[in-house]
Amino acid sequence: MGIYSEKQREQISIEELNRMLRITTQGRVQSYISDNDKEPMWDGNIYVYSESGSERKNDFLFRIPVQVKSKLVTKFDNQFVSFPIEKVCLQSYLNDGGIIYFVVEIKINDDGTYDTKIFYRMLMPSNLKDILDTVDEGQETKNVHINKSLNSRDKFLNVCMHFDKVRKIEGIDLINNRLPIEKIWGKKINITTINGINDLFNGDYCSYYVDENNVKVPVKLLGEFTEYSIDIR
Image: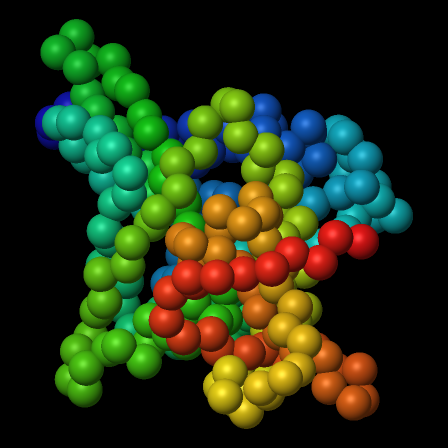
């Protein structure tokens, strides 16, 4: 297990993530992630462009902050990893409008080769606020479920587009004043997801209400979904 140094594991993680990003985004993502990065809470950004293979300023759409962690394992996790994140980092991610958090599991083989598995989670402002609300006084870290795996068949570009859309809705001031659902009985609640209805049941959605000033106000939904209707347009 100790065949690679910590710096080498960081390099492996970033190399594997960069390769997977190229495959799963149609070449529309350029990553700027450094294993020599000295920032305490961010490892870099990924930049999303309107055209494949472009780095032209005119084609730039938006950037997403990222953090990349490596984890040595003897066996890959199946569904998610639980990773400790410092409370101060969670608060900073919230103030910055969210982050995509990657954990790269590295399994070293007997012959010195290695295999990897990439997990990630979009930590949007609403997710971060909910996590921070569960941190007890005096608690410095919180175990966070990193609950998606990234493989070559995924369409990670859709994840990036969703991140940008939600980030524009869940501004720091609005998310700190989310409307509880009982405040808007009888009003229309809009929900945006990546993969449709299934995302409602695993928490990967953004819910909001459009007020009289045409402002999208985040809404906190409580409980489990037992009944729903679909408005097809």
